[in-house]
Image (spheres, rainbow, N blue to C red):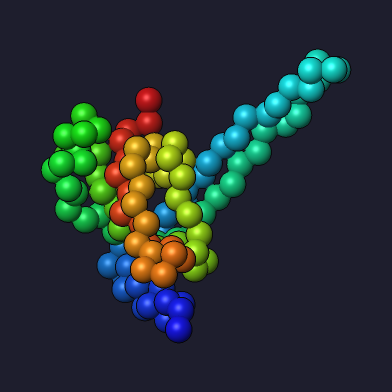
Length: 122
């Protein structure tokens, strides 16, 4: 048995208590060494629902962050199994943040949710 139902329940709960969130990862273009031409960059997104939760003081210490300025979000992607990547950006409460740490909740290897530590984008 998979965790699709658990994912759906988590998504519904966070949707009631949190807000929509979309994490965007931007990949730069690449240069063709033979022609010197660049290919266009691309972006991938992971949409879902998030709610701010208490952070782990040890993680904040390791990252050199202060929790008041760098929230921890419990994020449930709309699509079961989707992943959040380090360096992705998200707008939360009208502020753009960058992902500094992302820990999956994946009891069977498929991502149900993520604990994501973000900091104000520099």
